Picture 1 (cartoon, rainbow, N blue to C red):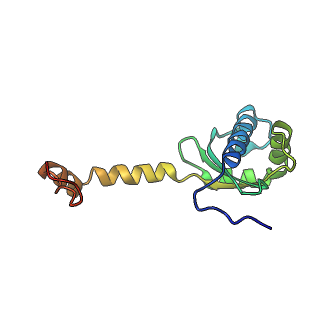
Picture 2 (picture 1 turned 180 degrees about the vertical axis):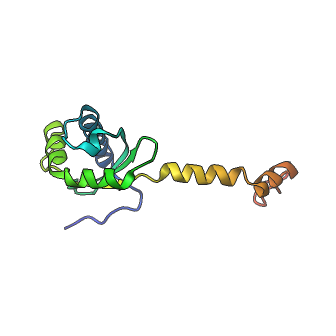
Length: 140
């Protein structure tokens, strides 16, 4: 009987395997083991990899250094997916080599959006006037 996915997030094994795959991908990209002019001309960071519950799909979030030329880099990674998968399988001992999927890492954009929000005049005004106390808290 199949287990239902838990809403608590990835299991410890998923996280451990994802980290191993992340390190393997980063090493392959850093060493230049893939012969592609687009990948050779960019420094690519792999801040996160997420594994599917069955460990057969690895979604790698990538970001070229400087955040430029994301589309050509992702296209180059997709073109070289077979070689990357072989290299990851060689470095990470799993029953099945995970299928690699590449997505743009948007956390840096999210950090920028939150930073801009915190610097906005409305938030600054609330902080200076002293935000109203939490209605659930006990009076001192």
